[in-house]
Image (cartoon, one colour):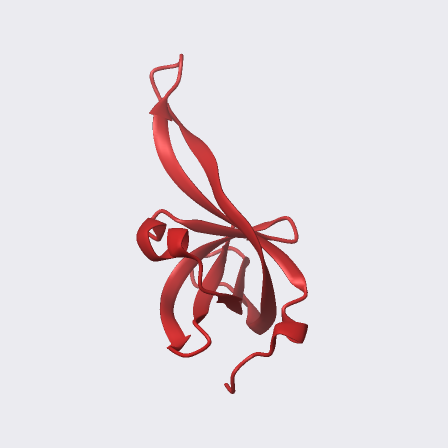
Length: 112
């Protein structure tokens, strides 16, 4: 895709780190810590129902573009999530798409 202009970055997304912490029932719970909230361009790239697992499962994938932030450069890990419009997304792939304008492109999948 061509470079996303700043005027198209009209959605708010939040980056979170997720870690497992022990709970009182000898199990684990997710602990979520917000890294940052920023403006982004969000575009749905696919959505389908899958019956491969024997029951209907929503499969939703999105592209998300946002400007470079120094904390993103060091804090993106496999456990990093992106929250948008009440949905949680895992990061499948990301790259710094434009070195001059410092735009990150994320390919994400919705988490049930």
